[in-house]
Image (cartoon, rainbow, N blue to C red; front, side):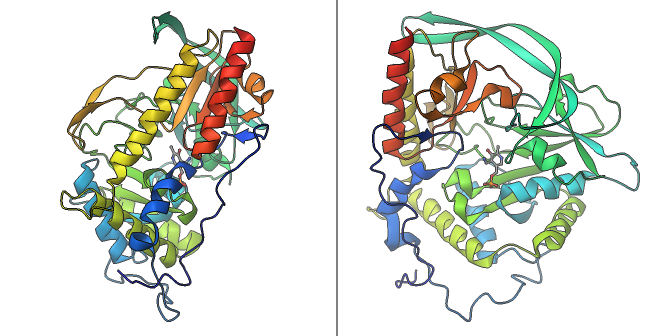
Length: 434
Ligand code: PMP
């Protein structure tokens, strides 16, 4: 590796967090700053790159590849990491790189729509609660499927059992980072957000977004509409060993991944799609060509370097000073979830779901799911977002995911100091309301 970390070797974005104990804690976004602590240790020795001024001027990265803007080094490292982790099949798949997986969601929607044969926009659905919505801008009516859970507290265990499902009429709403807004922002004539997949009953072709583990609730999802005229986009942003057991290599038509949630490098804006069908991959490439004429080479090279380091850290004969990235981040997630459960179990006010323990083929051990978000539930009838906001904890209300106000989504990926402060405050909220 180059030894001189010059121009593109950035100083850490933010100084160490010494926030006053009464400051606002923003856990609304899933900003993955938790990972800074690992990368600070691994730091310059393994992950600094130098890009001299004469390099990477061309629009093209590899004219022989259908995805002509994909850096060969990134392609190689993506394949290597998937093979090591075993979370996706890469043989006979086309890799399309995007500016974050956000751009690839749109590219996939474009590629799956078929305006020549279908005059109307194709419906896009996802099972609620889905990757997030905000109540600010409503568009069309849609039906929401509500699941009612009975929470019971047994010793220190919180169990919940679904006792009823029903469907009500509500509003489709959208936000800055979400499937609904991504789909409808440009009012495309090709595709249209159609709400909760569980109550989708319109005839004709449709696209279903399937996310596992799911954002916001960490559940391992499967498609729910299951019709022959359906097309699927699998968003596996969180299918990495720190969040969940890797039970088998994902094998779907279109799979989306992102460095944002894998390594925490959200600022690099690099995502990739594994695509089975060549024509679909070509259309996705076309979309990105028209949209941004490719993807930043600097960002791709940095991402390749980061993925290479992660792969190296997983080798049996790895350097001694390079801790296994997934072991380290899984330990962090497990500790955070343990601490959160301790606080929650101390109160009668909050509940968090339990997840099944499964065998992980990567770690060769049994593990729980440690989602990147906690789907916290307050007592029935309470507005959880408001309650926490009163204690300067910003979260995202369950209403914005098609669920009730007693739920909030809380990012589990903040810096240590922020997370510890959050737990202290949650304890106080619980004590005040017990
Ligand atoms: N899909 C899901 C499920 C996500 O949670 C996110 C990030 N919040 C994305 C896609 C977008 O990720 P990126 O930063 O790669 O655009």
